[in-house]
Image (cartoon, rainbow over all chains, first blue to last red; front, top):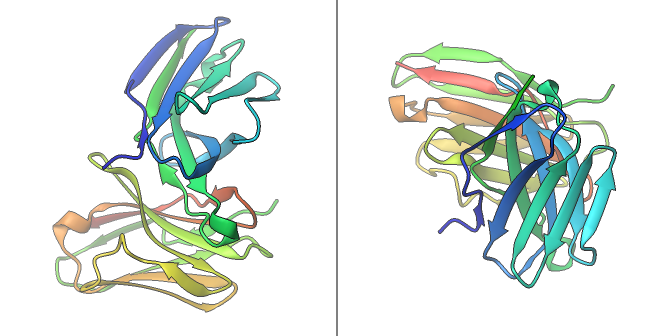
Length: 115
Length: 111
């Protein structure tokens, strides 16, 4: 049972345009969501996160939107740059009073930004 | 520049051999995770520790895998005996609150 789903295995975007990566989740207990970027032969790198008490969080070119009613979040990258080409993972965790912060990951979306 | 350090980066071993992967978490982090990445399953959680105590190892094949934290600066993941299906990239991550920071991984190949 996949609790975090990234339904698009890949996405191709032109440099300078917006990249939108999507993620859906099924577990209503999830209250914290994260995006990681991964280059080949490296570990995932934390990008940005959002708590369920918010619906938007922004950090430079990266913005994450959370729609709790739809159990959906998205990562917007504006403007996209060739260096953004990587696999992007969505992850979620359930607080549970501080005792259970394990991260559940989606399978990732390969973003290619073309010059 | 604080980072999670994993050794070795690459390991090729024969089926049946014991494999030990090591991880040095970021100083001060109280949570350590072990993940495995495969093409089919993506990033799957094997085990995690809070303040060196195991909290969840339900994702780990118990008959051959074991995870420990002998002290706050070292986490180990052992496979004995190893099998070809264990070939994957194994990541260690550490965290303090809600965010985990990953090491560069150990690429394991069992032949």
